[in-house]
Image 1 (cartoon, rainbow, N blue to C red):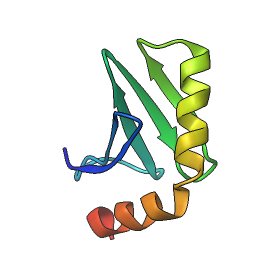
Image 2 (tube, rainbow, N blue to C red; image 1 turned 90 degrees about the horizontal axis):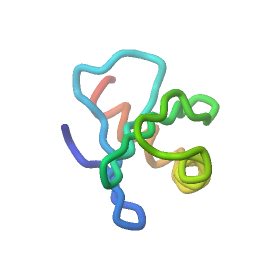
Image 3 (cartoon, one colour; image 1 turned 120 degrees about the vertical axis):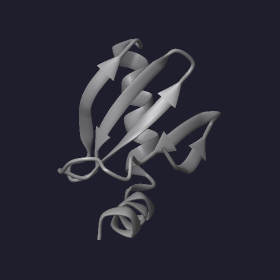
Length: 76
């Protein structure tokens, strides 16, 4: 699970064998937020509250182009 970016102590990862649509997994302390890069929007939240998920989404939205490029490197 390659870490493609670190934001505010969080790991943003892309799984090499993952499925469409384009998304990233943001790993925090004891939680995961899956962010759809085509929207962008939150696809799934595990273990964190809605407020934290919205903060993650804002941080990812600002780096969307960079993350789409990283995804293309893994998935063509």
